[in-house]
Image (tube, rainbow, N blue to C red; front, side, top):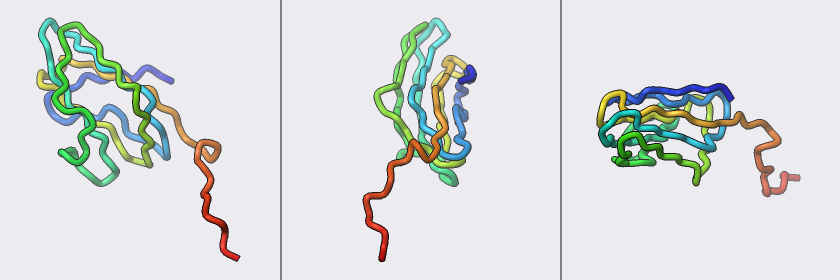
Length: 116
């Protein structure tokens, strides 16, 4: 995985856009300033927009010089789905993520019997 740190602006900032099917396994958010900053993160399906229905983290307060690691949930994204974030303070928070591309060995087989 290449390092892909992104400075989070005080407007929607794309942290990751999926190519094909992929899974986000870890997201790291670091407040690099000397004051607390808030963070909101959205998981947005292709063709949708950020909003209450796509929010996964809402107004998280990250203390000055602190880091928040989000690794308790794994998110499966389809092609062009994206993770977007907004900081209450422009460029106070740096984001990084760990993702993996999914292939047929990652997908579970259907339990539905084939039709005869």
